[in-house]
Length: 117
Image: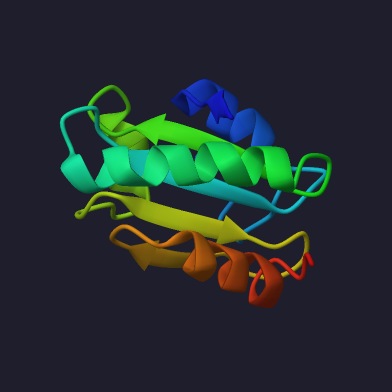
């Protein structure tokens, strides 16, 4: 899992400052976890994401954005609740979910939204 700053987000995910239409820059489908260190549900999601990062290695990328450190980035995507998870397929629009998900729910989203089995 890779920690993203505003700079790396605009390089690897989407350059929201210069583009109006969504254009994913990544090579693989991705999950972006918007979280904070003090957030209990966020702490429950982290070990699940770590496991998924191993299970889907080479098939998806998993990124984390600390909303306390990257307030401008979080505001740009309307993050009001954490954790908020952005599921980004290779083609098409990203989908956001709010709140902690179970391992099974993540797998379903990876299959259905990201198109990865």
